[in-house]
Figure 1 (spheres, rainbow, N blue to C red):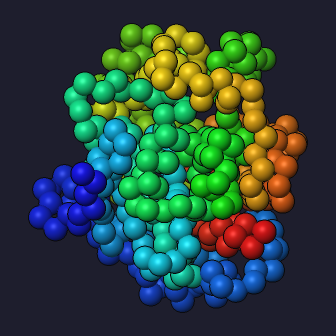
Figure 2: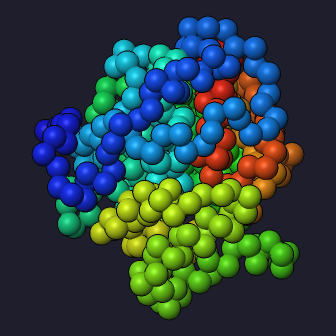
Figure 3: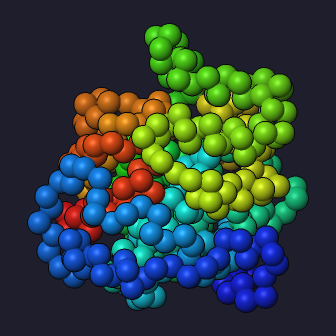
Length: 354
């Protein structure tokens, strides 16, 4: 039976994820964005935003619900009857990427859901026997199951990194569940066959950790030095982002999940064809390997200081056949929602009007 419970008597580990969001400040700063019922001027945001990133440090509540194979931990903000927005984080990050975005959208009248992906935070597998699978389609299946459990028929879905890939997949395979899409770095649906093709040396160098993870040494190294590894990725992927230790530690607590290493390693090995997925997802992967066009309204975003591997916008513009626009942000790196929360929230507002 599905459960939707507030964690009132939580352990110390879960209490680390909770707190009170700065809702009043977010509302006061939201005049540049408007509300869910107001027309946006759809003017592209070209630089870092007026709200200072890091204004909020935690979410007001953390909930749990059984959904598909998982007991999913998620933050929720905004009115229960508001238009739904689902925001998906990447690797190695967590729900705090949206800690400033969520109150902005909640103040505008949206119901905002920010789940921990499998292998993060308080999300747990319901069975010890379930394969700890990180292939691209299963993360999307998780989010569809979460929507079903929360009785959300359709939502605006946004994300970056793994979260953008997952949002892209839902928009491509289940467009009836995706009202609109906000995707950092655009079209990230992958193909094992395409991943087998060698890239120029500079591009291959940027994927150093993917090849490291292909080795047993890499798995042992990531398991032993998870937090140090993640901090290095943060620094390389967002070289202009001046995050502090407290900000990193809030997210790093999510990596203490018992399945985090297995999910992370399987994901990167599966991409290179070095680890098998599950046959029950073959049909979904076959569809994704054909690079399906996304038909829902979409805004893509990119920061000019993104140090992580990412495709140029010109390479994926034709993968979006609905109303579409792209926005570049100055001085922003890979973790775009946390580095430029108002720009990301603006994109959600604007794509809702498409």
